[in-house]
Length: 569
Image (cartoon, rainbow, N blue to C red; front, side, top):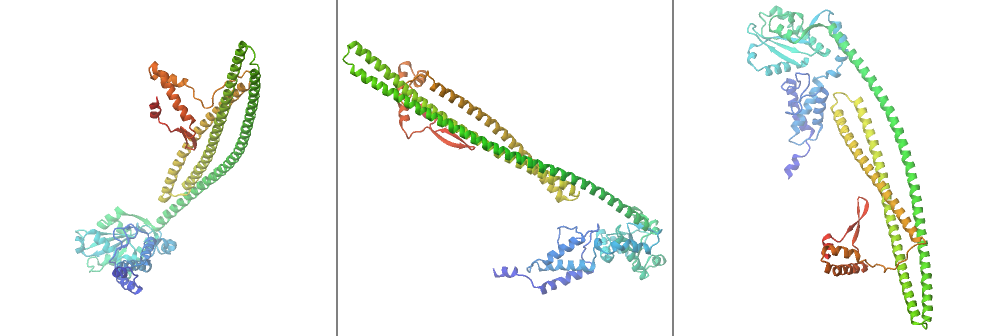
C-alpha cells in the first residue's frame, strides 16, 4: 500500500526539467516528425491517437498534457509534451497568425519582377543527393529531407533519381500561400549565400563534389526533359507572382460577395422569423385570454347547476314531508272510523259483516298506499343519488377536458418554440458545423415526438368530449324521468298501495326456477332462494358491491362471483 501511495504522489519540478531536456534536443535534431505532408501537425508521443492537428490545437494539446498532475510513471510523458510545447513556441510559427501572412504579398512582390515565372505551387529543388539513398524506402527519404529542411517549413518532399544522372534530386513543396513563397525565397537565398545556388550548380554540375545545391524552381526547371521537368509539369504550372496575386484577390472578392449575400439572406430569414414569433406570441396571448374566459364561464355554469340541484332536492324533500303528513291524517281518520265501527257492534250480524269487510278493504288500501309512498320515496332518493353521481362524473369530465386543453396548449407552445429554434439554427449554422447538424437532428426528433404527443392528446380530448356529451344526455334523461315520476306521484290519480319495506318479490325467482328446474319443484326452489336473499337484504353488514376508482372515475365491482350466484341456483 505504501508503494502505491508513493507512486501516485506528485513529481517535483526538478524531475520534470530533467526528463524534458532529452526529448527537446531530439526535436531540435529532427528525430521526431511533427508535420504531416498536408500541412497539418501530429503529436509524436501519442501513438495511434489523433494525428492531424492545427498549429494552435497541437500547442494546446501539448500544453494541457504537460500542465496536468503526474506520477512517476507519467512524468516522462508529461516532460515530452512540455518539450513539444516549448519546441512549437520557439522553433515553429503558426502560418495563420504570422506577420508574414499579413504583410508578405507586398514585401515579396517588391523584390521580384512582375513577369518572372515561377513553378506554382511553390517548389524548391535540392540537387546532388547521394546515389546510395536511391535504394532506401521512399517514406524514409521523404521524412529525412523534411527533417533536414524543417526550418523552411516544407509540406512535402519527393526524391527523384534516374540512371542517366550521377546524383539524385529532391523536390520540396512549399504550398500555395504567400508564406510558402517567402520560405522558398529564403531557401533559395540561403543556398546562394554559400555559393550553392542554381548558377553554381549549372557551373559545377559536372564536378559538384559532395555538397548539396538548392534553388527556387522557375521556368527553366519546368521545361527540362529530365525527371525534374517531367515531375514539375505533372504536379505544377508556371505563374507570375502578379497572376497568383490576381487569382487570390479574385477569390477573396468572390468569397466576400458570397458571404455578403448569405448575410443578407440570413438577415431576411431572421426578420421573417421575428415576425412569425411576434404573431405566435399574439396568438398565444389571445388563446390564454380565451382560456380564462372559458374557465370563468365554466365556474359560473357549475355554480348555477349546484344551486338548481339544491333547489330541486329541497323541493322534493318538502313534497315528501307533505305526503307523509297527508298520509298520517288519512290514517288517523281511518282509526277514528274504525273506532266508530266498533261502537256499532250492536248492529245486526249482516251489518256487522259488512262493516268488517269495509274495514278490511280500507285497511288494505291504507297499507298499499303506505307501501307505495315508501317505494316512491325510495325511488326519489335513488334518483337523487344517481343525479349526484352523474353530476360528479360530468364535473370530472369537465376537469379532465380543462387539463387536456392546458396540456394541448403547452404542447403547441413547445412545438412552436422548437420550430423557431430549428429555423434559427438552420439560418445561423454553417455547412461544416457537425455539432449544429447533430443538435438540429435531435431537435427535429424531439419535434416529431411533440407532434405525436399532441396528436394523442387531441385524440384523448375528442374522446373525453364525446364521453361528456353522453353523460350530459344521460343526466338530462334521468332528470326527465325523475320529473315525470314525481309528476305522476303527485297527481290526483295516484294509486296508493302498501308493501313492506325491504321485501323481495318472489316472481323473478319463480320465473328463473321454472326454466332451470322441473315444474313440480320450481315453486319450492324459488321460495328457498327468495328466503336466502331476504336474509342477505336484512343483514345490515352485507353489501354486494365495492366502489373503486378507475382512470379518475368511480365504478362498482361485484364482490360475488358468477360461480357463487350460479351455485345458489
